[in-house]
Length: 335
Ligand code: TXA
Ligand code: MG
Image 1 (cartoon, protein in one colour):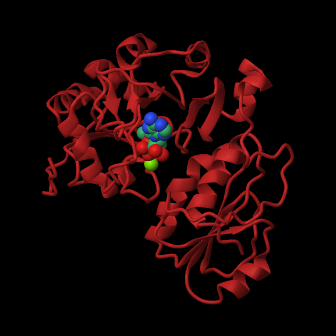
Image 2 (cartoon, rainbow, N blue to C red):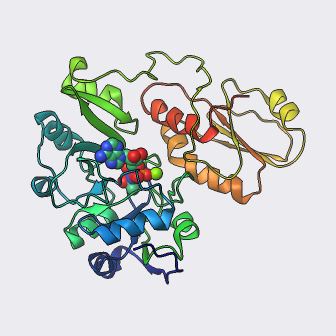
């Protein structure tokens, strides 16, 4: 059912997840925290509930939802095939920030998978997500809890500001610790393909399964190098202000390129001293940069920044995932 009316949104905590679970089991929409980003949950078996997810976030109907489980014991009912490598990956990295695309079973709504014969399965590790998934004990469809094309939400307050009125409930789980969406893996000709980089890195997967089992991602570089400006057009992960990438931090360029107005700079290197109207947020390492990416986007938007400049991270390990999000949110704009 297309339903654009404003919903009365109720708020829940770790202690009241049972009430949120009831809403979900009744076909409602519940935003829940995970270690990556907040998710917009619906009963993955229920066509109408899944349709409501697309409506709530204005998501194109051909963009499938991933499905969250409490435990690997639910895999049997959700997928029709489980390659050995998938089992090994789940055993090693789940619960955690990993999604694996597998042939779906009849239990999963084809609305959830946008008509695809496959479903992305993820078992999150966030303690509140686990309480919620344990309470419902059903597969929960859950895209990131943001309007389509916009930045994901990594805190309860941004989840509320983005989704209030669009969903029936929001569970407070505090700030997300990873801050970037899960690694998504698929299979291509028997090999593992990284469909979306995340905190479970290419290196970690190769360590577990060997180099031959994994297709090397094209964007991957063994040593950090100056990235080329990506030519592809994206509309993803975007804050309100346009994002620009800066590969070498240059305070003079910041000031001359943006001579007026409030702008935000984020990265590992500190460009200070710069004019006061340039807000600077630096992070001690890649983990902190990734964790704070979306919350800093939201913060800069709230400050009324007319542009956001982000330092290009080294493209290894978690830097690959961070760069993927920066590429897309900047549309490839380089300074
Ligand atoms: O960390 C995460 O993965 C978060 C949290 C909430 O779990 N979820 C998330 O969902 O990022 P979403 O919908 O924002 O991103 C999932 C991506 C989409 O780009 C979608 O196209 C892709 O996964 N996807 C879903 N099902 C797929 C499938 N069967 N085959 C290929 N790609 C799929
Ligand atoms: Mg998303």
